[in-house]
Image 1 (cartoon, rainbow, N blue to C red):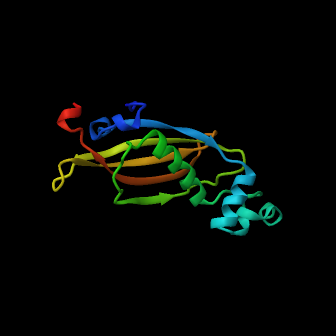
Image 2: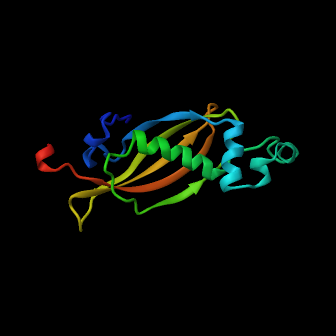
Image 3: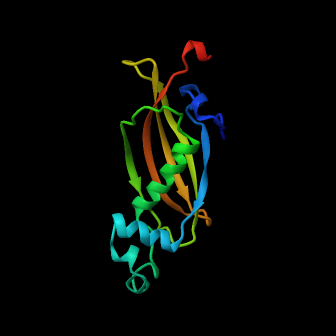
Length: 159
C-alpha cells in the first residue's frame, strides 16, 4: 500500500509508519564528476576515480562507490521520510549493492515498512524496521538495506 507522510517533518509520528506501508522517498541523478569527487575523498578505488583504468575494467566506465549511493539516499531519507527531532537509530542490516551506479543514472528511493512496534521499555517511541530499495531509471536495483529507526509515538496532547 502506497502511503504518504505529513509534509511537515515535525508532524510525523510512529503512527504514520504502519507495517506494510510503502513510501516513495524521492529521486536524484548522479554525475560522473560527483562520483569521482566523492571517491577521491572517501573511497579512492580506481573504478571510482580513474576514467582510463575504469574504461578497461568490468564496468567500462567509472561507477559510484556504494557508500556514495548510501549517502545520497540518506539525504532523501532524512528530508522526506524521518520525523524532525528524530531519535538515534540502532542500526542498519544487510546493505547490498547488486548493480553498479553509473554516471547520469537517476535513482529512485522506496521504503517499505517491514515491522513497526512500540518499544516495551520506552513506550514513548516505536521501532520501525524497513526495506530501502534504490533503483535506477531502468528499474535495476542498485542498493538495498534494512534500517531500524526509533520514532516518537504521538503524545496525547498532539493527537
